[in-house]
Image (cartoon, rainbow, N blue to C red; front, top):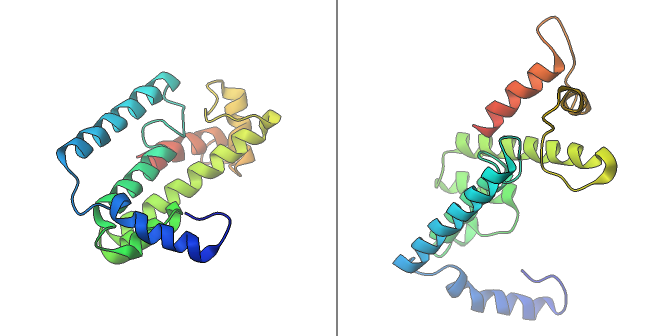
Length: 169
């Protein structure tokens, strides 16, 4: 999408690129390449282990990949679902009926929650990480930084771990 320069020229470019970005049909080579890309992504995620929230199974990239694939498949005929913002695209996909509004809302909530976890992780030592700690101490600190608290019903860590499983599902 245009980021600088003449807005009219940027829009002209976007209109000219649309038939290439959103083809009439996806040929067999494109489908094979998408499958291969997804396979490479999943293989890289496996190296990060179960606590990788960005590239891991049910993580941030899974939501983004699903949204972008739906945009690629249906965006040629429906410009309303095109866009670079994942949450806005989820809303548009749900409103247009490509996914149920309930699924769109669930995916948006999971995506937002996972992004919040990612940001809390990165605030520790101000480093770029996407791994939930394995050790109970740092993991509990993360849970408490996200607002979970120990109580009669269970621990902050237990509540966080249960929600992590739920959101990734």
